[in-house]
Image (cartoon, rainbow, N blue to C red; front, side):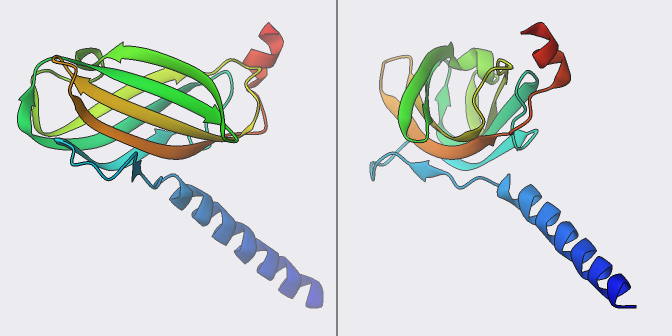
Length: 156
């Protein structure tokens, strides 16, 4: 009888922890500074979460603006436990439909190599317009899982 009670408690704890881990995906987004930006970011969705090494991960960033954006760049910088490790630049219109106005989503998919270290990462995204004006700058954290995909391990 006592064993059944502990089994039930353990099961409830596991269900609670799995629910919390799915809520963690609703990443907190912080602006880089207190400047006024033409593009507002309302949230980030990361699938899968945590990100799996050797598998495709999609970052979808919900944004809105009163302006019409017909061209621009996204600068993405990544830090691992606070240490800068990578940056890349993308054409804004390759990551969302242009012209962008009102509510829109910036979506980027990428496969992390199977040897990507697990742990906590911070992504900084700076969006500039065609004229070089900074439209927004945000940071958010994400995690890379501890287990690499079997296919990625086989490729090493």
